[in-house]
Image (cartoon, rainbow, N blue to C red):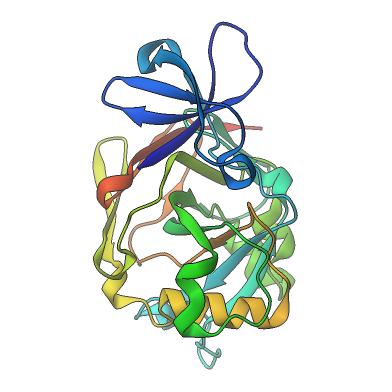
Length: 255
């Protein structure tokens, strides 16, 4: 099923199950209170979708997790997958603006499959990864790529406010092993890929990350971005499509 987080008519944020053109309102956060419903239905057309989850503690990213990453790096760089953090203050939702800070060099989009953790997870074995995953959503791991190269580390370049759009909903029944990823900017295809090409698989990612940090319900793991023409500038519309999850749309503007 698809779970969305939304407001309607000035309400506080609520959760709902997507049912065709409606949201079936849930009694609380499904990660903590299950899937009991209130009996209310809200038309999707009348709802404003929010980021489907605000991570309780962290967004974890996996960089360099698709073939060909050496094309993005200076000669001689290590190309093994890298684990990094983005603050939860970088998270925004569907249709929110990505605010581009006034930094030298390129800022890029990175359309990615995102794992939403649903249980406390520490040193999870690969074969047990599904037990701690609540579902999957779409992420845009926005990055000030030239600043990242100059800094020699990734925190600042990936951590700006609005640099982690998530949405439009969480798909709880997705098989992540064979999902297409496509990113379009202003109607032009910029990047395509497939999760079957991940260097670290989903179970390997969960095992590796949970060996470093305890994962909490609501934490998000970004699994990596396929290569492509990734640069974005102010005034553009970025659309990321991933399998049955749907499409995450955001615009860009100068901060």
